[in-house]
Length: 462
Image 1 (spheres, rainbow, N blue to C red):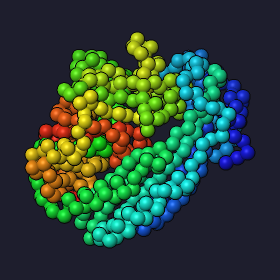
Image 2 (image 1 turned 45 degrees about the horizontal axis):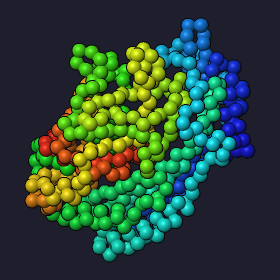
Image 3 (image 1 turned 90 degrees about the horizontal axis):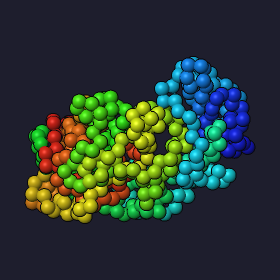
Image 4 (image 1 turned 45 degrees about the vertical axis):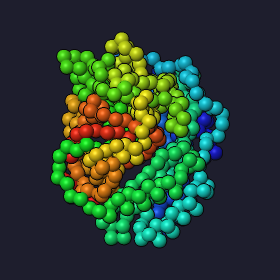
């Protein structure tokens, strides 16, 4: 990118700052990807990028204000700092203003080390296995489409209070679509990964082959409420939306589903009848993520004044009871409640969850088995009612076996309401959210059984 390292850029920004406080961070990213269509590799590529972000804090007499400016590449440091300080002066006092942090959080990283990098070599074993899957699909008369991506992002964070923090974040995902040659049948399988060493192409291809086989028989069903088995991917998309809504301020002020009728929030309320636990942990095996916050702009979930704040493990729901909400330090001080930071992973589990998805299918007299959800949109923030469509395989289960594929549906459900109606949660496993994997890949969820999932209308999508 430049002869100037990320660490040098951070130090230059902090040295050039004339503000009352300053945070600077540099994000160095490398990415490798493969894409394929109709059983053939179509493209492969590698990319490199750098982003420099400066947050300046200026006290104009009426209170501390914050201004953020970001640039790509290697910018003019003096101009970048000046722009950030001007943005702070133009912003006016910040309601989330608190003193910047100076205590070094756990997992500060090796500040002096070079940034971590990925390359196309990450696919050394994956690509030949994919080629074998192409040949097998071609022999069956099926088509495979999809892509694989791997990125390594190193973030260097420095503050005028002396913090020097660094984190390396590997992220990877694979999405594999299988289609019939006339495109009348389409199914999906996917997985998240840190390094592709744990990705089994034969397992993904076998999952696609099995679902395409299920799809050969077509059954039309009307809208209605059905006993439904949601696989881990679909569960993750729903639970992520609930997680992203867990802002304490919105709850305290009555603006989200976690607000208590009559005032306050619902911490302490039972949300699930089963002993379900929804949690985040930066040290979760296979889902490891940063142990401190890096924040470019303030929101109800994070504050620029909290850069460098520790992100320890936290239970959001424990044994079915709401335990924590996301609370930046400023709102914590105003409500005399603990500050709680969001973590970039999410796990849902039950102590009794041992059944596999196949075992749950075998125990189903009649119901639906979904593959994924997509085009998810919020309808009502007060109840967190969501709407969306099913995609790439809705299967009819009869007598403990999948007997065919049914039409797609539009559905209307609240993930918080669903928590209270889940009658079985299976074994938790790493999964890839289908709808949200552009932003979130570190999730582990169980398959779940809902006795009355609301398929509100038949969808013409195919």
